[in-house]
Amino acid sequence: MVRYRDKTALITGASSGIGESFARALAARGMHLILVARSEERLHMLSDELSRHYGIKAHVIATCWPQSRHLYGSRYGWPVTKLT
Image 1 (tube, rainbow, N blue to C red):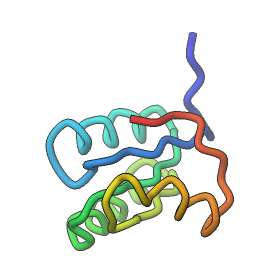
Image 2 (image 1 turned 90 degrees about the vertical axis):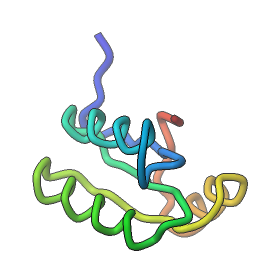
Image 3 (image 1 turned 180 degrees about the vertical axis):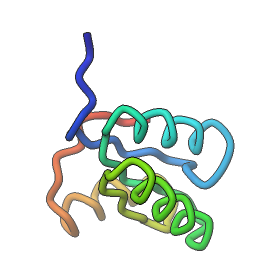
Image 4 (image 1 turned 30 degrees about the horizontal axis):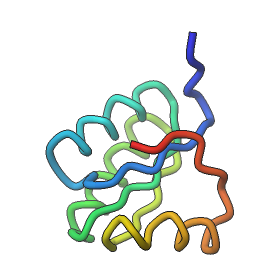
């Protein structure tokens, strides 16, 4: 069985569609999230909702995917254990 609680997933395209669905599913399993997309406002709304509802940490990076992994590593220092 995969253990998700207190692990971290970096989710690209998290502001809508399948990326948002992954974010919701992983947050429900207790996984912390790094939400990446170009729409900063939508990301913050999702981050706030999931943090309140599931008690997880959710960070927002408003950028395109190629830059996000490097930005996150230097900015927050969390090891990324799941990439979707």
